Image (cartoon, rainbow over the protein chains, first blue to last red):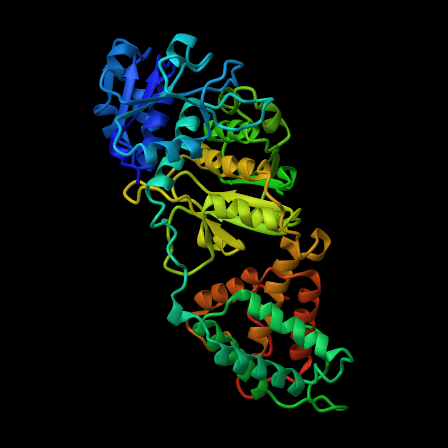
Length: 256
Length: 256
C-alpha cells in the first residue's frame, strides 16, 4: 500500500514556470501533495499559478532548494526519471514497476526526480538515484513534457495506492440487473410480438433470426428498468390494430 | 493487439489552443497520429505549435470537423472521457480497461472524445458513446487538464499496444461492426417508430427514456446485420395501420 504523502515530486532546474504549475495540477489530481523545486528558474510566478488551475496550494507549500544535496538529505529512496535509455546498466523501472517498488518499500521517504526541459537530469544527478524511471514511449519522439511525465507517474502511483478499491464504482448493482427469468419472459414477449406483427413468419430463417435477437439483448446486460421499458414498447406495438392482409384502412403512405 | 493507427483522439470544442498542442505532443509520444478537432475555438495557432514541441505534424494532419456527427460518421467504437461519475449507469472504463477493450475489439475504427476545458462533454455527446472513460483520481480535485488526460489514456494505449501478451482473437471483424452513421440512423428510426406508435409522446420523461434506449443498443455493440434486422422490425411495425384513437396524423417535428 502506497502512502502518497511520503512521496515528493522533485523538479530539478525547471525552466518554464508553466510546467511547474502543470506538474502541481497533475499531482493534486492524483492525491500527491509534496512538491520540491531545486533551483527553479522562475518561481513563484503567475504562469505557474494559472496552469495549476486550482492546485495553487501545492505551489504555496512547495519547498524550494538551493541544491540537490539539500533536497535529498532526508530521502530514503531516490528515483530519477530519464528519457534516455542509457547504455550504462542501471535498474530501470516503468511507471507501473516504480509504483510497485514504492509500494513494497512501504513508508520510505521517496523522491522522484524530473530533470530539465531540454536535457533531463545530468549523469551526476542520475547517479544519486537508486532507480531510474523510464516511461515507455515512441522511440522516435521520446521526450515527454515534464508536467505530462509527472501526470503519468502520479497516475500510476494513485492507481497503486487505491488498487484495493479501484475508483470505478460498479455501474449497476446486483438487484438492478434483470435475472434469467425476466430475460426469458422478455425474449418470449419479443418473439410473440414479432409473430403478431407478421414479421417472423415471413422469414425462412427464423431460428437464426431469433438467436441473433437474443444475442443482441443478452450482450447488452439489461437492467430491470430496461426490461420494463422494452416490454412497454412491445405492449404498445401489440395494442395496435392487427394487420389486415389485403385492405389497409389507411393509404400506405410510406412516411407520413 | 492494439492498432494505434485506428484510434482517433477527438477533442470537442477545445477553448485553449495550448491544450491542442499539448494533446498532440502527448499523442506523438505514445505513437498515436490521428487527431480530430470538432469546432476548436482557435486553430491553427502559434500557441498550439509551441506546445506541440515537435509534434506539429500531428497538428498539420489534424482533421477539423464542423459537427460531432461529421466526426463520428465512420467510427465504429466511440468512447467518451468523463470526469463526472454520473448517476445514470453507463459502462465506465478506466484507461487500462479502455485499452483492453480496444485491444479485444481489434481494428475497430475508434474515437476517444475529450470535452471542453470547463465542463467536458454534454449529455447529448455522451449519449453518442458506447463507453465512458474515467481516469480514477482524487475525488476532491478530479478535473485533469485535457492534454494530461490525453497523455494518461495514450500512455495506457501504448503500453497495451506493446505488451507481449497473447491477443484475444476478435469475434467480429471490422467490416461487420456498425459505424457511427449507421448507429445514428438506427436510433433515429427507432425513435421515429416509437412516436409513430404513440409510445413516446405518452411519456413525460422522454429524454431519459430515449437515453436509456440508446444505452441499451450502444452497449450491445451492434453489427451491421443486427442493424439490418432491427430496422426490418421497425419497418414492419411502421407498416401497420395507424392507431385510430389518439395518434396524430403527422409525427412530431424534426424527423421525416
